[in-house]
Length: 371
Image (cartoon, rainbow, N blue to C red; front, top):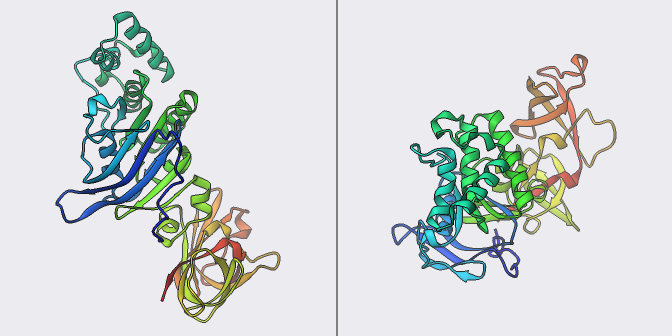
């Protein structure tokens, strides 16, 4: 990754700005390395990455629960490094909900308003509006233990929004929910964000969640943003193999660059196969590169000429309803995945048979030059 890959275009009047922020817990190892990130007012930005990548540490520094070792964090153009968490005016939603069990739902929502010394009539109006927003208007008198997990999470979201913050932070807020409820809450949070226009910084390790909800996604690895892009750009145009592998399913083929032709390049794979690919991030001819290729961009028994046509041996066919997931041996990769629409029983490939595979050069991304 080049040195500027993680730096966003400066956003004038940014809601949040990380300016050369670093974080070390032991004074030696940096868990966040020179972070530069601007988040626009009303933007939904997700920090995505595996455990230990630095994403949650960034959120904790923004919330004020962890101090930055170096650099400055700004909120609405004001430095906040020395501002205590309670005075930053930021809404927080945690994975474990963090609701007060001895309080009713309405009392939980009223608590941050009482801290801000709002009058009772104003508190009641804001609590009602927040509960109606998450469709829990009739649940104000219940205790958290009387609610389902999804309802408790809605209350947690409402409590983070009830005092009209400019910024809401969400730390793995859907991690404790089952798959169906998790997907439902993704859409609900996205719609709430769209209706209110509040800035959201969201942390997750779930790439589907990030793609579904975000305006932009920052992919973290080893304390560095590997790529900061819109969801579609992240999936369609990964800038390195880590991003390609982490976002969606992906096939990898390795080989040597033999020529470059504009935005395309020719490569010889390790088994001698010749292929064409988009030259996203490669070295000079003679250097090695890794090709990233999405399983759904590959055609089985191509009906027309393709830039790349190779043979593959079927190892396994998995029936997944609307599509087939086919594991093949291709160009030295014995775990090569092809996804094809389910065309009925007569179209299921036979294990052990050889089939032609075809794909466009533009769908194969040549990445990560190795000298």
